[in-house]
Structure formats: structure tokens, C-alpha cells
Image (tube, rainbow, N blue to C red):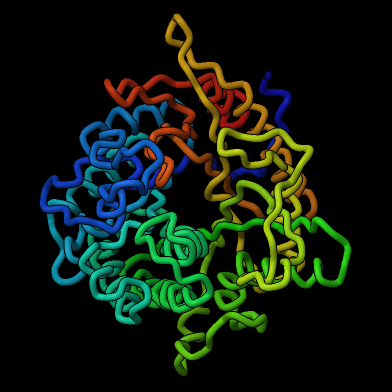
Length: 443
């Protein structure tokens, strides 16, 4: 594709790529880092598809300068990374480990030296294991510990990080990690996982206050959103769609924007104390939107433990994750957020958008990934359409810079603009890397 094929975006639009600590850093025992719930989970037999762990991952801890050079070559203006809580506080409490913060200081300074804005996510699912042993996000005290951790990070990096993101995808961490047991910490609580939602949001609100006391940079949260596509046209189907929308989308947005929790059944108000909702609704400067696909929903069969049934969406191309490729879903989502929340909605940045495909180097070592180029092209056009419809979208981050350790799927799914040979740690930019640089970023 030529650069002329992609429409222009507003001046100052933030182009970036995203990663997370446990998925790329490795060096899990380096410089005093403590164990996280993902270290424990990955080393538990039968939990990870290929039996791998994040012990080495992409060895970014030792190769960060090479990876920052890849960012510079891509021409992006921002890099979203996450800070590993157990590198900063090995047990999730107490004084900061200076060696852990030293690494992130080196990374931030390297980014700034290449003209790339550091965008730091404070929690991307790697809770210190010691906090999990004390109840994890089921324990209200974890919210207070998170705010203390945020204060420690901001005290060191608050003058250089350009955007703070408190939590990554609290819905996914609640549902897959605590509701269904397929992510760390592996709890299977179904709707009894609501305290995990509330305590994450409470931690977010407390962290916003801590960050604002230490840094003048804007503050955000990154939510995973999935617009509902009904698979039927009955009142029961519509009720099921509303229930799923409340759980996946509104549960983590309504209270952030001052509307309290949705009234749908299943959300236990017993853990909500006086004043909590005010803390959660502390004003944010940006709403991070992570989007991968819509969700097909129909009415659940009688006796189902859930008030909805998730069904496949047919008629779309599919990724290696078997997720449907629906760019219009992103436009619908962005316009829907604007229509739902109106003046309450802050500017949006798409903090994750990407796809997994089976990318294999050819005989000459090149990695051609035309499906990813088509995916990004379609989703960027959807963002442009949302902007044209009046939605204030100010940035777009591709997931991900590198192929990496994909949680419960291990090394079996590749999302990167850059191919990683995990045996040698050789990085090879894919054709999508060159396309994104030339057609979109246009450095």
C-alpha cells in the first residue's frame, strides 16, 4: 500500500505501540525482583498452552536499547510499556527496590533520547505473589498498596513519563483471572468476582490522587471494550445483550465517569463503602480503549449460571486466535462511547489494537504479514471515521511492538510488528512494520 492510501489524521495525533512487562522483559530473578502471580501460574503444570513461561520472554530487560532503536526506526511518537510491580516492590509493600526503578529510569531516558514519549502502565496483571497470598484483589487492602506503589514510581519518574495508565483491562483480569480461572491467579468465582472489579477501580482512584501529587502528566486507564452483536431478535436476546454490555463495558466505565455501578443484577454492592464511588470517579485526562472484536450474544438456556450466551460471529475473516476481524466494531464502539457518556467522556486514545497471525520467516529471512497490514488498515480507517463523526480520538497504539509471551497461550500466538526468534532473540521487522512506518506514521 502507498502512503496515499491512508487518510490523514489530526495534527499532533499520537502514534505508538504497546507492550507489557511480563510478556517481554524476562529476567524474572534479576536485581531483586519478586515473584508475581504470573510467575506462579506459568510454572503450574497444565496452565500454559505450550508449557512455556515468561522467565526469558523477549529478554527485553537486557535488550531494551535494541528495542528502543526499533521504536525510533518505526517513527512512532510514543511507547506504551508496563512497569512490573514486583520489580519495584518485590512483596507489594514497603520501600522501593532501587535496582528495579533504575531499570525503568534507564528505559525512560533511552526513549526520551530518541524522541519517544514514555507512556507507563502501572498494572498489567503481574500482581506481586505476596499480595495474592494475602487475598489479592479480593482484599480491599490491595487497593491501598497499589496507591503506595504508584507514589513510589511517580516519585522517581513523574518528571519524565508523558502519560500514566493506572490499570490495564481490569475486566479481563477480573473475568479470566478470577471468574473463569484461565489467567493468573486462576480463581473460578464467576459472579462472585465482583470485589475484584471494585477493588481494582478503587485502587485506580487512589492511584490517580497519588500520581497527581507527584507528576503534572495526564492520567488514564486502559479498558478492554467489546461491543455487543445480538444473535437473535427476541426480548430475551436483548436482555442478554444488555447484561453482557453491563458486565464487559459499563461495569468499568460508568463508575469511572461518575455514574456509579450499573443496576443489572450480579454486582454485589456489599463491598462498596461510603466515599468509594467518589474516589473511583476522580477525573481522568484520557480514556484508553483496547479493542479486538465484538462479542456475539444471545439469551442463555434455562439453568445457565450466566444471563447470556456467547456465540461466534460468522462471516468475518479470523485471526490465529480465532477472533473475528470487524473494523466497523471499533467505529461503533468509539461513537457509542461518545453517545453514551457525552460531556463526561474525556479524550480517547486507542491503547491496544492488533492481531495474531502465524508469521513465519521465508527462506531469505523476511517476514511478510499482509493480513496484519489489512487489519491495521481497516481499523485505522474506522478510527478516522469515528473522528469524522465527532469523537475526540487523539492516539492509536498497535499491539504489539514485538512478538511476545501471550499469557495462557505461551509463545503460540504472534502479535508483533517485529518477529522474534525466541531461541536466538533475533528481531526481524515484518512487512507490517514498514507499512505502518511509511503509510501511517510517515516519519
